[in-house]
Structure formats: structure tokens, C-alpha cells
Amino acid sequence: MARFRRLVCLFLCAALAAPVFARTEAVPRAVTPRGPLGAEEQNNIAVFKAASPSVVNITSLGLERELFSRNVQQVPQGTGTGFVWDAQGHVVTNFHVIQGASGARVTLADQNHYAAKLVGVFPDRDLAVLKIDAPADKLRPLPIGRSADLQVGQAVYAIGNPFGLDQTLTTGIVSALNREIESVTRRTIRGAIQTDAAINPGNSGGPLLDSAGRLIGVNTAIYSPSGASAGIGFSIPVDEVNRIVPRLIRDGRFVRPALGVAYATQQLNRALGLPRGVAILRVQPGSPAAQAGLRAFTRGERGINAGDVITAVDGEAVASPDDVLNLLEQRQSGDRVELTLWRGGSTRKERVTLAASEE
Image (cartoon, rainbow, N blue to C red):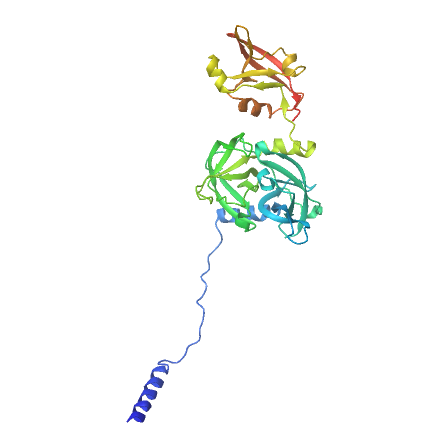
């Protein structure tokens, strides 16, 4: 009986394993033609193809001592993005991308690596310029646009290396204009462009482009509790970049034009009941301010001796030292500016020739 049961079991198992139907050939389904790409898609592709050869990956390098040999070597410590500025091999990125690094390596879109030399930095605007010795046919400078005439709602494109994923394109619009963000030096960067194009860690220093593929900003920061893109990113406007970068290339640093004065905080204005403006605490001897007769507030036997309060620069009202510095940074040493000054209840105007700062 046991043998009979085994035979029945084997028969049933074989019957169940046998195919019910004959095998058919595995043929993929036919592909449905999609037709031509839409105009917006075609423009997205065209912008990326034109701009991507100009976008670079930047690896910041730090020094590390080997445990046993005690030899010091350079090791990667962070990554960011940059872009080719000109045919001489200058590359623009954020200052914070290379801050504290002992060196940097630039990788072009064709994956060739080049050691980078530091040309100049301006931390107050979070900008830095590097230089690589690459063949001229490898360098594709980005066309420069304008940021002064941007409008909310314009299409924008960001290309960068988020999370180390190189040559990544994200799209969006100009969400807002004239935002204020804080630089690494705690100075205010005014006029920043706000966009909803996805910007993540690694995008810093990369270009923000308009629909014509022109540079309109340098991506520098995101607003996000999690540290990832939340649809609010900020870019330094290209008009600022185009004003600062040539001076970094020429001078190796941003030479700030100066009046030769030290400014008071707003607490002094409130304590003394001064008008809206920037009070002068000290005038450097021989400076442009001294030559123009500007006077600082001083403490005398009978109290505070009245000094000058700068209320406007070339007709533009100022309310803080940051306001004055931002306006002066738009000029160069040797330029003349008109200061509107308040002293002891009366207002006057003085023209001052700016000098180069000693910073």
C-alpha cells in the first residue's frame, strides 16, 4: 500500500508540473511613436547642451598626516560647482566651496582633472576665482546676461553637482527678486535672486541660467530645515559677479574704495537722537574724509561734540554701515561721490574722491 501511495504522489506531482498550454515566444510590445518634442523641452535640452561643457566640478583639498610615516598629503575634503569664466582658464565659484582648503582640483565636463591656483576671493559676496592651465579648446566660457532686468516668473536653469552627481540640470522660475542673504562674513548680500529650481549641497558655485542660456546668477545658498532643497534657493546676481570677478582677476583681491572713516552702530543714533543715517566715529588723518572736512563724534568736557551723520551717498539714502559699504563697493578708488551730511541740525553736501582701502 505504501508503494502504491508513493506512485500516486509521483504521478500527481508530474501532472501538476506539466504545462497546461504550449509555450509562446516572449515578444516585447510595440513602441508607440511619441512625435516631436515640445518647444519647452527642446529649449531645456538646448540650454543644457550649450552650457554643460562650461560647468566644472570642484574638489577642495585638505592636508592630512599619515599615521605611521608622518608624511603630509592632500586629501579631498569637499565638493562644489564652478564654471569657466574666460578663455584664460579662470573659474568662478563660491568662496565657501574652497574656504579653509589647502588646494583645489577642477574637473571639466570631459572628466579631465586640473590642479587649480587661487586667484582671488571676496568673502563678503561669497565669490572666489580659481585658474587652471587647460588647453584653450577645452575652455567654454558661459555667455553673460543681466540681472537688473529680471522678472519674477522667468524660467531659469541650474546646473551643478548636487551630492556629487555631476552635470545635473534642474529647472524652475525666478520666485522673487532683491532678497537679502548673509555671507560667510555676516555681511548682507543684497539683490539676491530667489528660485525654486532645486539646489542642493554640491550645487554651490554653479551657474543659474536664463532661457537663452546666459549666466544670470551664481547659486550660493538654500533655505531648508533639512539641508536639502525645499524649493527656496538663492543666487548672487550676475551684475554683482560681473563687477567683482574682473577686479579679483586684476588685483588678486577686491580693493574696496574707502572714505577713511569708522562708522558707529545704530545704538549711537538712538542714544543721541540722531536722524536716520550713519554717524562717523573716527576720521583717519589725510584720508578723503579728512580732506573734505568730515568730523567725527567725540566726547568733550561738556558731553558729546557733534560730528557728521552720512544720510545719503550720491542721493541714495543709507541707514547702516552696511548700506554705505555696499554703495561704495559699486565704485572704484579715484571715483568721486557726493555725500549728504547732517551735523547739529543742518544738512550739507560734500564731494569726496575715494581712496583704496588698506585691507
